[in-house]
Image 1 (cartoon, helix red, strand yellow):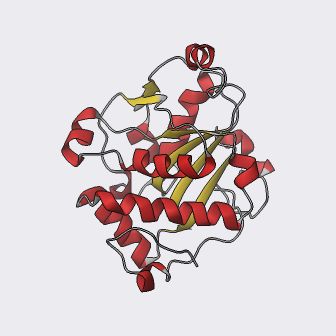
Image 2 (cartoon, one colour):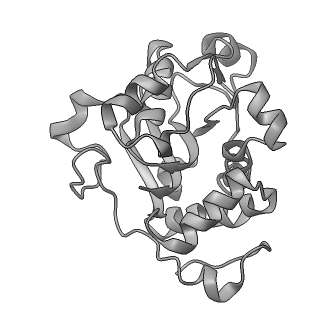
Length: 224
């Protein structure tokens, strides 16, 4: 079980959120040490998806719902702590220590309305733990319907298609900050609160792959 530091959820309830065991392919569900299994690698730009818990857990689901739609900004810390506990339990710290954390972006209008980008808040807490930079490499080009409201997988892909673009050229950033921002050689962790079909993370990863970044993983609090 995970522990808790922040408010908005009591220790007893937080302790009822079970951490996932092992790593699964986010496409077929096969458990393995690679993330995306050998058979599914050609279907996705993601090398793997690390998910701390299951979205069907009612407590975790309600935390994410309040975090995004209430919005309760202080829930960012316990959700990040859940991910950190999973990273530690699965012995992923050494693998991810030299990563670059890239939050899934919001449109400017939504960020102003909500007051924060929930993915960025989670990424900042994880960045402190892993001692990794958090860089907004992506921007949101268009507003989309909430993915959770679209049950059909193909329609989710269509909804999120073309939603992201590079904020800045990674090669330029790598030149400016070679000691910390070697994007093309680093593992990039796309950070979000929840992944249901994985379509949002895959769309974002496709944009990063087009810039020459090869090793891209998703990192979320919950998998739907």
